[in-house]
Length: 413
Ligand code: RNT
Ligand code: ZN
Image 1 (cartoon, rainbow, N blue to C red):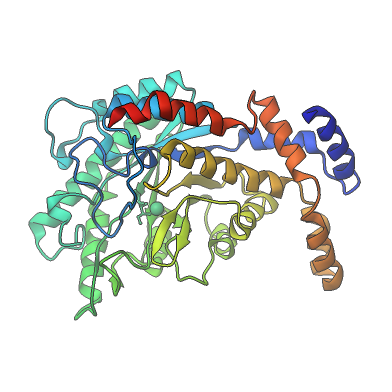
Image 2: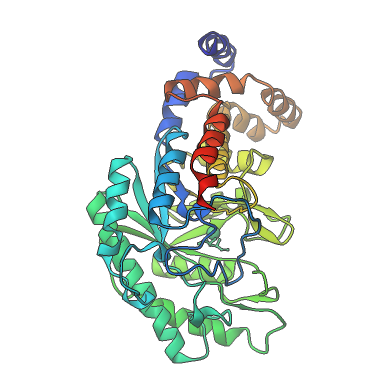
């Protein structure tokens, strides 16, 4: 049945010059970095206090992973329901060690078990220092803190995290994206916006003074426009990091939830591609004051994917997911978000971009609009189902998740 529908769709796409077999093959090679933190509401293994620092998970859905064994088991199960090329994205708070360790003293070997897990599941690892959910970040300031002792602690954490990422990258023979995000900001109108920014700049200079081979690590910096409780001012805003990254040879990471409501990341990617080899993404979904809802197949996700595909930027845009919903089954959240990212990419791979670009250049805007709208109802779903089919998967994953919930998750209470 899937095959029959696929063969029909293949003919339809052929008429507009699209090779669906090639689109499926390309989709299989595009890595999506799946964030571990959806599995346990960004708790990590240090304590059970939950996320602080301008981010928050809301919801009480039962069955979240409470330790490394549960998180790895859930992750493994989620990965088994997702096709294509996958990576896993870790945070420093997911270090595995029996001792109580301060974050400025995290050692690469605390991630050996994750390297083993990654190898067993045929995925590579990305990494993030954790500058939140900590007593020294409780006042919403880390690398820009007025107290030098606090800044120095977080500088050491930044350095030690990069050492971990470089170690992972070397071991796995694939560069590890090491993404730096700090919550630093203020709830109300600042007396000085400049001072914290100058302190952040100095802290970053120290963190990035250590050099690693580019085969091991790609360093990225992530901006934000606001945080919960930090509504008036964010030290590391977009302008700050874009210029810092440009001057220091770092990669910018654009989180789709970190801009004003009418600002879109799909419009920013090409600007960055004019000047950078790589652009990293945190694909998320902003809803009012939250920046982290589960990714759905909406117009903006499709537009982002078109930018990646039509600008020949598949090897340049590093795709990671970043959302956390505690109100629904967490494994389902992983599967829904990742599959939607892949659906959007497939949708982009099935469009005749060169023809559409030609129409734009010839200023034939009526045809451009008419055809773009016509293409929206091509039998995309049949090609998607064939992708799943080739990956040994189908659309009935929810039943498996429900069973897993009944047999495993609900017994965790
Ligand atoms: C927060 C940032 C950051 C975190 C993760 C957990 O607003 O998006 O990337 O969500 O690092
Ligand atoms: Zn993010």
